[in-house]
Length: 260
Image (cartoon, rainbow, N blue to C red):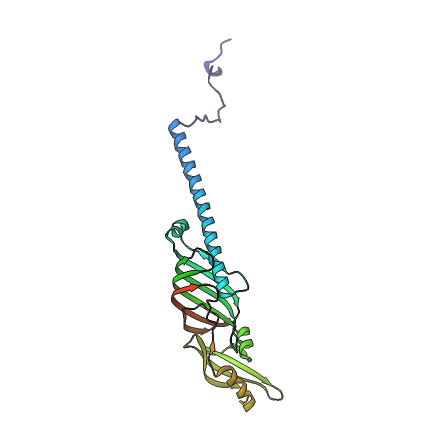
């Protein structure tokens, strides 16, 4: 019987069926290119990993210096910006570092006011050979003072005022009830927060209430637990507390470096 040549399978050649695709192996040149790309990717991944380890060590050293200098109960969080960090460390200066610390205690004051939260941005940060000192070329910081902490420090109930830039201070007296005054908040010399332009908004300002409010608000309250070299620029009353903004040049963090 005659058999068509199309019914015969080619001898010595692989046959995969009508729906199959024949895949030829890559050429030597292509293989070398693939190997080079894979090797480069592995080197980059390794470099990133090594750089991340260096960044973590720098962050840890900075956190230690800040915690020792500010006597914070908890270790602050630190983030080193920029890549690669290794070249920054080699030059002896980190371009920018962000620090966030909470519950910084105040000591050595008749009205100790803790800083509820302190956020610090440091430019050109240099660290010493040990972990207890760090020096920044310039610093911008914001100290958040919660109304709860303010109330405890002043001895009156402090809350957000009805007008921008103002807070309410309330005292409660037996038989008399609540007496509330509104006060403007502002930055005063010596890194202090001042309460001025007092206005009675509720109740009658009888002598006992006036004495309590004068004792709390008459004299500006110092912020004694911020790093030395920072200067208070402005204060802003917010919904939950007061934001105090600081700037500084050539600031060093070391044990007992706070202004307390």
